[in-house]
Image: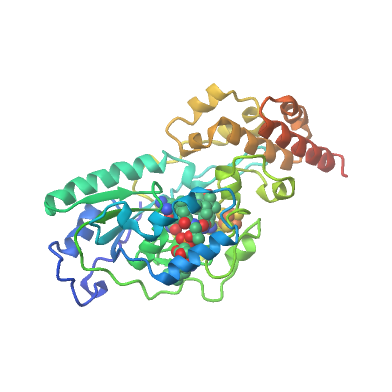
Length: 368
Ligand code: B12
Ligand code: SF4
């Protein structure tokens, strides 16, 4: 395994004027994060600028969030994170790399699962690590109050991570670290102490590069480091509740959970630097992802197969919907009967999706 460079650890990245209320050495906090197994760590102030708030509201107003109403409902907390911890002064952002040397080789008869979902559910892994970090931090800063999150509260995780110097936002909207690329999860700890903040990195990852914009099968990447989530395949296969609209199905291809295209093509992800986290080791093989087998999978089998995996969070209906879409895109005539059988399914999501997929399979396999 290659050595992973730690996040901002040296004093030169700290702001010159420590805040008067700081009672904890920021460098000690960053060192503790590394000792707890995180790959990146940084500290920022908790305030969100009016410009960011406005930008986010405009993104919502344009309908880019699709059906993710929680992004709208959590607006008040996002804009005022002290509603999560009223004494919070600083945010400690933490990054955990998930890139593994092994992935599932692509095969035309198999569905594709995004890299972040190949191992143990990252919420569980991050939660365990954050808990350990917070317990140790509490011992260092006895009278402080802490709360930690990872994808579990309306918090601008990418924004804080960028402000804390973990990386810089790329055109695909993700935070790219000059050391690790973008294949890392973000978690954060809100703390009642005013810690000395790190400086954002002076690093421009994208410049004139448009690889991700061109590679995105859904044309979902907008200007200004944002995406139209309602078209993004990760949204369609994970968050979207209903049948995937017929016109968007071709872009999904064989992807049955998430999408990696805008990261796979990114030059910052080319380095052979891998996670140290054993729980992220790939648990799936091509045999697990054979579309003919998945089309026959019962809910019980699904729950068993994906126990401990983030895939289980989608639920059987959404997952089978994705398998039906992929089967429809496969051009494999052997899957027609299995797809057709879902047209009479009690779930309107599955029956409608099967109708679209059957149409597409018939058209592609009959040369029409
Ligand atoms: C909703 C959501 C999604 C949605 C929407 C994604 C999106 N880009 O908005 C969907 C379902 C599509 C999605 C997909 C994925 N997601 Co997601 N997702 C989230 C979630 C819960 C909220 C993101 C959000 O607020 N989006 C709304 C947009 C408008 O917000 P924003 O992009 O942060 O932009 C705001 C500011 O940052 C600012 N801003 C914009 N541009 C710039 C530029 C500069 C210079 C600055 C300073 C600020 C700035 O303006 C905006 C408004 O203020 C976060 C967790 C969290 N709580 O943050 C994870 C999160 C962003 N997802 C993550 C991951 C891993 C993914 C996937 C890679 C999973 C996969 N393989 O399928 C894909 C990647 C797709 C992509 N290109 O974004 C990670 C990203 C880690 C990283 N290194 O960046 C996060 C942080 C989860 C985590 N805890 O690790 N996701
Ligand atoms: S995850 Fe896939 S669909 Fe979404 S923006 Fe990236 S390349 Fe496009």
